Length: 333
Length: 302
Picture (spheres, rainbow over the protein chains, first blue to last red):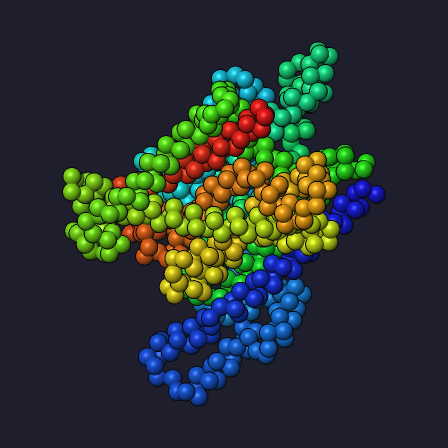
């Protein structure tokens, strides 16, 4: 019974997030004083050296508005937008790479982002939690505060600083990695795969470092609090070893809030991944977004952001749905 | 509920390091090593970046003031960059602008978050559920893509202030969640009931009873929001979507990366802002956790 209610509640939040997110994506550009169509016409006009006649421009505007779903009043636009996005995952064609559909561009970039993000997040989370557990369990020892210090030093540093520092240290001072990485496309061969893996290490290291600090600090705090629970004292009096107490008694309970924390911080992690991709020219969603933003390719931007919202919300949902399996209290409420 | 667990995680995260020295009856209860280090860093950087600009020889945001790519010298402490700007003065202005933006955004966010969080937590019922749905949505939605769209749309036509307002609009949700969970725990306390039975109305209770209690957390949240705002603006600037002509901790790195400072060997251009940013962020972070530890120990004493 408890699980059913939990799942229903969580699903409700999921759909609300999707709905509000899509609505914001729809409304924002339309509330802006700037009209992308004007921008496109300006670009075409300047390429043609201003030789396009007024009628041709009117026709151009007509077609562009049709193409980018800007016809009719706001409500009609909204309905057709929801219909296109939700039912067909169709964001129209890219402007820069016309007539390539946006959805294809995004789906090409998605595996890159997912691969990097998932690996880095799992490593950062696992490592951070282990270090945090040790730092928290032995928090009265000097060596443990060194571990915590690593967390304090890493946590407040922004992603872009970490990225630039990693680049500076590992590609410039110690030239282990190339300064500007190349990511070969096309048919996958073992050499290409190795090259991609090698070149993905820098953005990967950045993401792991960034996630590491937060996980250490919050796991340490949770562990300290859990260590003082009566049942841990009881386990000690019962004669269980330090190791058993740390892993079986403290770790499992302290881990639960960390799972929810991960679900909630996914948005942040995703932001960081986008930024890291941009700085390292890693061919994922982030780079697509950056190219689209500098080139004024709005359809691609809207597609990428819609996908981001769906991806982050879904990942959060999945983690929260796994949660009852880990926490028996929800199952037996 | 699953999501509420985060609050305990957050407050647990923000309250590390039990304070060793407790002195009653004086302001010394405030002092712990973290706070001291944090405040010293903040004082040096804050005062320095606000006083020094009065002695600046030229506006560092104007390009081609000096010869390009000058090395470090007594005249140019950190040299000049490929745009003919003095790196030291650019950095000083950058710290000042970033701090100003951070504080302004933090003021706005704290006001919004306190109003939303207190009313949701205190009024409760359906109102609370709807408000919290919005808050959770705002927390879950990845912020950067939205800001990238905004940045792409308004690029070049915006003021530095607009960037701050945009960050404010999208940044209040976390704080509102914290304030609300505090209000929830306060709602059940005896002294609130006491005030209610004495005939105080909702507004009076909020202002006189709840707010002073929440003050300490608000201060910590305030500093964290400064961190958040500076970080976000700098992030936008690094990818070229903020007002990049204005010196900030992000725009200086944007220009350095754009002019390939790493390839041309101008490492001062890129190392200086990194060091400044790390110091500033460390200072803010230590101050916020230090304050939190101090307040926690004070509550423990009284």
